[in-house]
Image (tube, rainbow, N blue to C red; front, side, top):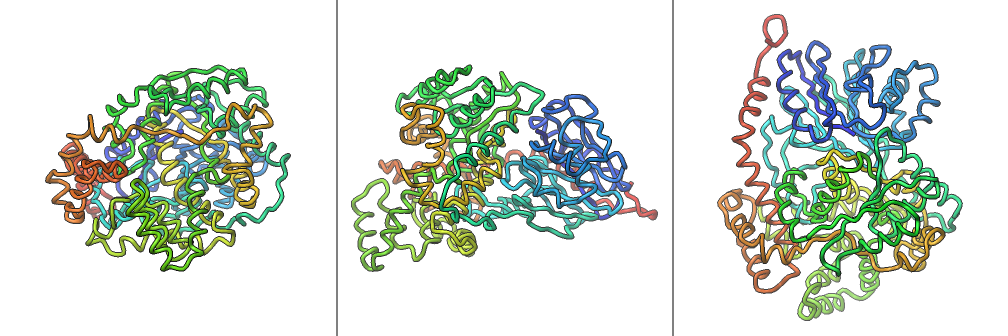
Length: 639
């Protein structure tokens, strides 16, 4: 697991070394073990790397790495779990100097090109340089577990694992993306909250030559899977897929541990680990609030399986001290408050291990979210005439305190796509159009993003909803949270349930099978073969923070100061009167608006941080701008 950065110039550029090193150093937390830099093609291409050593800890495995033939150079962030398969299939004649996955991936790409990507079982953001063709190939794994950002300048293209490495180029906020954030709580790829800055999409490769994108293609999209077409379940296939996914993710040359919440997903992972003969230590967060604490369930599971277990006590109220780390860690507006306890968990587990297994991924492919149940009920209501639904919506808004206005929106939806879009909408304080009056199509674009997925999936409505979550929620929320929180503490996290074979198996199962006995039927039945049901049959809880108490208590002053501050009010694209209205309603006792306040405050703080840090970054930005404005001399080279 590592951090990567680089620049591709249109013309040779000899003086970029200080800038590249500064970019790469911002990623130190992603790779504290070593660093490397290289200039290629007379200074047209610069590649930087920070390493977190996981496999083959020797210096010979450091990057940037060049192939035996000298034709290919690579920087690679991630893990390829089926390295042995790739070696046998694509590298039979190669003489390998290392025992890790980087060299195998590089040699395979050198001989077979991007056709190898669908064969890779793992997580990756990778950049290959072909010395003969003078092209860079940037690619990202199917699940979007590893990030890769791209900044397009006038005379260059830069890329990096995190946004912070690209701040040298003076990032400007892009208000046109704000509608996505207030709707979903995240900005979906390829978009970001900044102009000229995009993301490589999951399952996408981009080819760059002399600082310009010359091609791009998706080698995988979840909409291509035949969602929900299997009417029968093969339990042997389920067990085999889980066994292999877990077994592959045990490969490591450094200590490995696991997260254990006591829920279905993480318990299933541990049951298969034990079945495979491994008893790695497990960790769980123990909250001080008995209503939110699941640590005793995790302890019971660990005891039954006979595995080491450590309880990490956390005062949920003390997590408020991590809010600034949260804002820094996630880099652009990101509304998932479970990112805070994720930071705590990863920080503590890092004291004992460098790799951890996680149960993330079971809900999307095996129908585990409560919102799917809400979707089912709302679909039934859609059978009523619109006039009847409108009347019911008005009644709900007037009589149901916490969910009334949301139910009213759902009942007014015209079709399945707009309905699911309304269900996942996180801004419940009114109309996003009123909040962002000058942003074009601010309410239309998020709905169309959902509709584009629904229109390309032939399955039932629930399969379409799950496919949307696989396309966007997993890479742009779930994996952003997990990647940034873990790498903030230099911890690698692996998710067996996001193994492509397991995910595809779940996606192809009919909803009637996955929902036969309630949410997540298949995984619960699979776990029931190894652990008594009394130990895990209970409502899903998940990470949470006492947001209402925070906003009314320790954060109240900071929130009000930012929401009423000059930076937010002078940004020019937010209707601060609308934010004031929602803030007053929250203070008057409408606690259901707490998440809206959090979302608005995250944006306000992001604006403040970007403004305050411009002075900090100014020498860095000046260095970048001065360098990029230099002109070639008579020989065509930069001085």
